[in-house]
Length: 502
Ligand code: MG
Image (cartoon, rainbow, N blue to C red; front, side):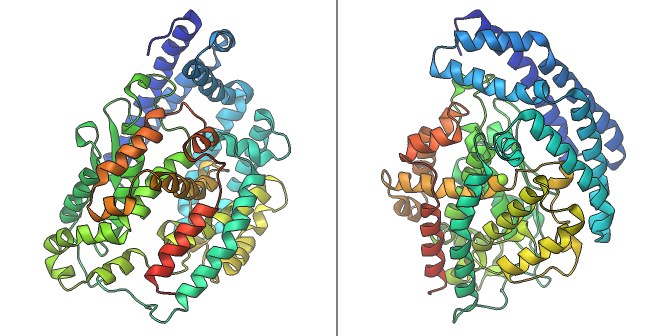
């Protein structure tokens, strides 16, 4: 990218340094999850801590705040202004939150992660509670330093989804919850609702090597560039961008259920397509990656749910499935496979939830963490509040903490304000898709397995911009309106009423 003003050129030079550090951090993080020998954990933690410190020092350098001030005056074009805005936002955390708080937070969360792991294994929340209490107190302090108008939770949300507020979340969730709960009820009480599913479970074996072939097939088919990325197994699937030409995805092979790896690979593939599709002019600038977690999740969920779990896609996939798994799936028909990928059932675990119940898990977490940050709920009372909300929204109560309040790692990592972005992704995806449908015949593209036409729409309307537009600007630009729940509600209702014939 060509920039004329010296302040902006210098700023870009600084960005290249910090982004190189963070890409190296990313690479050793990828290695930690994919390859690390068990004995190497301590050494690796030292590498990671060294790089974090190095990068914090660079961000805190007074020269950078002066440079940012000058660049802000000098920025004239849309791109220059976005570069300054993105770097100012990134610097805010390091300049406004005192160093001792950042260090303390990092120490407490690494201890909390280990405590959480153990507490989850033992299913004993009380062992994790003191750590959680401290993490919440530090989060409140961080929110105070970052600044907010009405609600400390807003300062935390803004770290993950620029501009998002608790008030907006409450509005979206109030609109979503009754329809979703009602839909779950109707589905599970419908005439043909199956109590159990065929083709999966302890009597079935799907060799990981076959699942890998299927995952690679799906990735290629949706347009992921394997020359600029790779697929590996890891305990928790993720996507990581390590700079130009290197966007990696991971997946997890469950031997008794062939769906897990396929859907999570397509999900991560959606994240990766976004990163691989950013304008090449933005490489090595603060515009080079996806703009927010919510927009990122719109991409992963679009490919996972609206493509991967779509009847036409599954029809296209049937011959591949039945060749690869001839003994396991040889007798399956399309209706059974469609139901298998779209089975709705209230469960305890968020990451195993279907498309309809998923958002209800998020609403529960949002309400609880908002109350914790605002001092309306104590960590002592959290498991009770968790179970009450499970009963209210999903009609079931977890029998133990590991299936309830201890299931997610987010709070142990110190991440408050992260969960809502998962649901936002669904809303963005449905609203973008509505705009897409005015320009291309999506059903026809799916029927013909012509994913290139769909990908090129995303490239042109979302991917290429990287972090140029903030999420609210992007959704307005592409769809002509503010983010709304109506497109998602209409998508989900129509899809599942169709599948369950209600
Ligand atoms: Mg994701």
